[in-house]
Image (cartoon, rainbow, N blue to C red; front, side):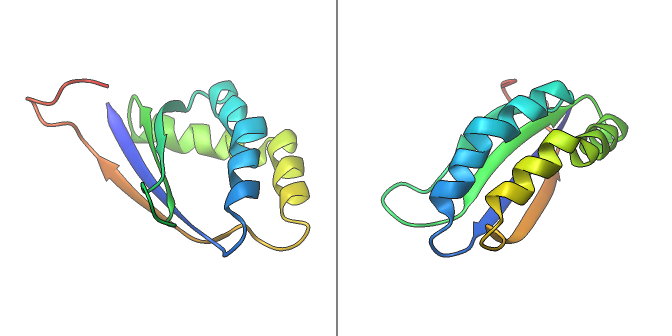
Length: 106
């Protein structure tokens, strides 16, 4: 199993719109394209980035799923609509992880 830890550094004042886009579109579209969502996280008691963990069988499956997701017309429309006033995210960081042999499986 391959895990991907993604961090979205959100533009000031855009977090609510980003949460809405995930809740109304992104999560459902991830499912459509075989992207397994493990969890979404924000800092407690402070402003900060949106972080989330995804899981895939392997890197090839990850790349194929993201290619399909990015080219999905519904995703493209949702992204364009949510960014009418400008991008929501300043930058995205992505780290690929493998579980250790003693790690519980999420």
